[in-house]
Amino acid sequence: MKDIGVCDSKPDIYLPELATVLKVEPMTKWETFIEFKLDSEKPLGHRPGQFVEVSILGIGEAPISVSSSPSRGNSFEMVVRNVGNVSRAMHQLKALDRVGIRGPYGKAFPVEEIKGKDVLFVCGGIGLVPVRSAIQYVLDNRDEYGRIMILIGTKSSVDRLFSEEIDEWRKVKNMTLLETVDHRDDNWAGIEGVITTLLPLVKVNPNNTVAIICGPPIMYKFVVVHLQKMEILDKDIYMSLERRMKCGVGKCGHCQINQIYVCQEGPVFRFSDISDVEEAIE
Image (cartoon, rainbow, N blue to C red; front, side, top):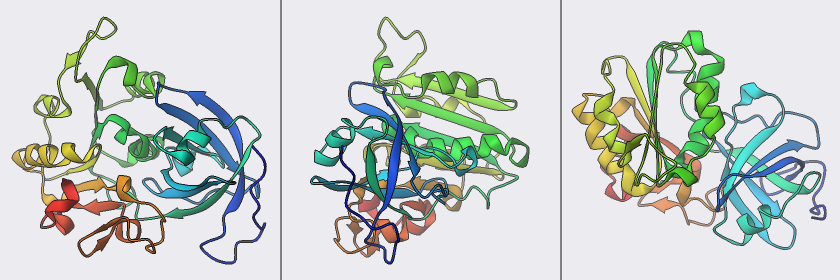
């Protein structure tokens, strides 16, 4: 890839900075892991749950969630699903290629505000990608949180992401980690079923538990119902609606849900703030 034609300075929100690809690694048939570093050598400055706009010269730009924690150094990571022109071009990147980065943008997961709480992560499919940033942050500051519960659901064993890292998470103290696949095959001897299959298997203190969920839109309404049955309050349920975004700065209207602009007011929302907006979780 050639360098994208941008300035080194960043006078406004529409001009990206240059970043260099450090590592590219296929993860599944559709997802590729990419690690970047800003050419300025400064940290990206993101918080868990935020996103950036990635631009490829001659192709365009797309919003991509940052999958690594800001506590992990100056580089930052993404997992890109091959679903369009920009993501297809990103799958062709190799080490030392350069791209444009705008951001970070958006409302983050409340990892600072929930210190001292038990944290329940519910991740469906590629929803693990943005939530991984929050999981890493919590684990890097493990003593500042209560119990950690991570529930992960994927379609099949070949669709699993970060399997080696997940194995490391299992070793963390005071941690519950459960996985399920929609359909079991010869490579999977674990739990079979959709993500809600796992929720009855964990016991929570509803007065001290915060739930962070991300996954396909259809997942949300079923997961929320289960969390409410577990008596977790709506104000303690956070969800990411990052899949709806495009421009990242509230100009294109692609992410608008009734009166809400996801890229500016989200992508992370407290469920109590959007519980009356049915379109938000459909």
